Structures are given as C-alpha cells and as structure tokens.
Image 1 (cartoon, rainbow, N blue to C red):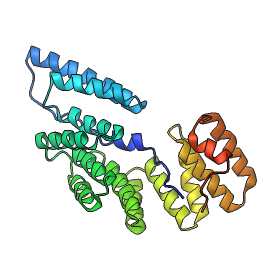
Image 2 (cartoon, rainbow, N blue to C red; image 1 turned 60 degrees about the vertical axis):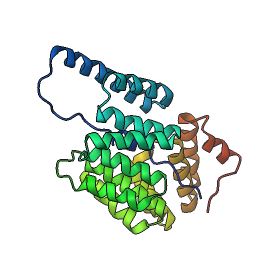
Image 3 (cartoon, rainbow, N blue to C red; image 1 turned 90 degrees about the vertical axis):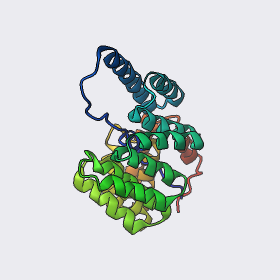
Length: 255
C-alpha cells in the first residue's frame, strides 16, 4: 500500500528558523528588517495554504531587501523543495547554513531535504546535529522528521523510537501520532493504529490520506459502521480529494 501523508506542511513549517537576537538597529536598518519580516510572514501564510508560487515570489522580494537573512533562505529552500526544484532548494538551504551554521532549525530543514532525495544517512547526521543543540526550542520537529525519514528507509524500529521521543516532548504532536499509526498498521496492530490516528482525524490538520488510512484500519478491524462513519466525514471535509475518488472506485491498494 502507498505511504500516506503525514501533515507535511506542518512538519516543514515547524522547521523554519527564528531570527537571532541582535543589537539595536539604525532607523534605515529597522525599516528594512520590518519590510523583510512582513514579506516573510506573507510567504509563510501562502506556503501554509499551498500557494507555493506566490510564497516564492514573496521570499524573493524579501531577499532583495535582506540577502543574508537565513530564515528567509531556509523557508525559500523548503518552498523550492515543495515545487520540485531540487537544485535551487539545495542551494538556498546551503546558503542559509553558511550564514547560521549552528542553527538547529536550519539543520533540520537540510535533513528533511536530504531525506526526500533518499540520502538517508546524510539526513540523519543533520537531524542529530539539530537534536544535539541544547538551545533548540522545538526538538520534537527534528524528532518527527527523523522518524519519518527512518520510515522511508524501512527502519521501523528506529522510526518508532524517534516518534515516541517526539511525543515525550509534545504529547499532542499530530505528525508523531500519524507516523506511529502507520507503523502499527504495518505490523497489523490495528487497535493501536486506530488509537493514534483518531487523534489526527479529530483535528483540523488532518489530510485526505489520514481518512483513507483510518478507513482501512476499520476495515481490518471488521467495523463496517465505523468505516461508513469515517467515509461520511471524509466526503464532507475533502469531497474532491483524489484519494476519495480512488476509494469510491475501488482502486485503493488495501494490502
């Protein structure tokens, strides 16, 4: 069965950087910073809503104002990765790391980028560097990405360890719950898979793939009533999703 989505945008945005505290700025510098911040905020909002091309335009404008803003370069790398421009994404992420080489959020970004390319061992080095930084404010982001990366690599035991560490840091982390649901499903532990995935389904951040997986879990459990209830929710929340269309046509690869 195909791998399902894991609230990817949330994982990516969780990797974005926060500007370092800096000395007081002159009036002109402060204006440039303010205008750059506005562009960055707009880009983040557009990226979150899936408008990647507009997000990229805002980030390019931000870089015209502040060419050495690592946070702008870092998000630009993620946007380019989402668009599919791997070479430009790599360059933007590397430029960001040259400016702030010890920034754990940027290291996390680079790790996720390398994981998408299938360079798993290199990716894990970046995740570990991020997690070794004691000042990292949100280590659960790197822990989730490391777990999902190990899942892509087929290393289920290591993936589960990272995802459980993420929940230790943040018990409400939906990406970790979705990943653990996937792992439990793969080993036919359907009650545990259901327990994790229900937390995702009940949230506003669920995606169409989560509903497909939830339905397959109920099918494995033999609960037709729950399957139909989930189908009704899925139709209401994602009526035009390709996953729903495939399911209704009986094209779902249910292993």
